[in-house]
Length: 144
Image 1 (tube, rainbow, N blue to C red):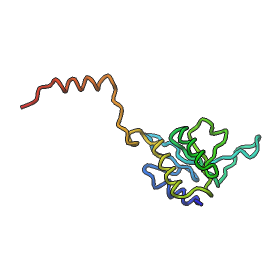
Image 2 (image 1 turned 180 degrees about the vertical axis):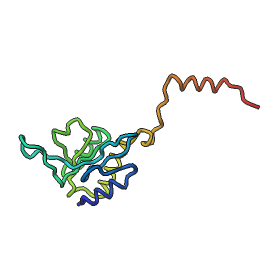
Image 3 (image 1 turned 90 degrees about the horizontal axis):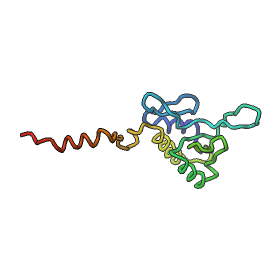
Image 4 (image 1 turned 90 degrees about the vertical axis):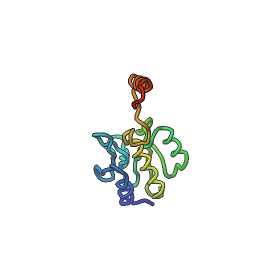
């Protein structure tokens, strides 16, 4: 079982992560912050506003394939609802998830929302200037 304090400790241990509200965490992406985890707001009654369910955390995932894998791997821990259909986030039962599993999920969420340069991928070069720069470098004579 993971407590709210565990969630806070794990999330804030990630680089460039901040807490925007009670159990609402985001990571810096350039000048903005993008959400990585937040409390699930459950629809208890169809005509009433959603209510925070403190036993469930919504966590961003890399893509819909990653979401599907989690949902299939442990349906007692990970689930979703129609509100999240087509959105890369999974709902996590805090009473069932381990600290280790949640740490991994939060790290993946952070990586999915961080700037591309921080994800370990090389920055894309524009095709117009990169070949020209290579041609120019190849035609230069060596300096003596």
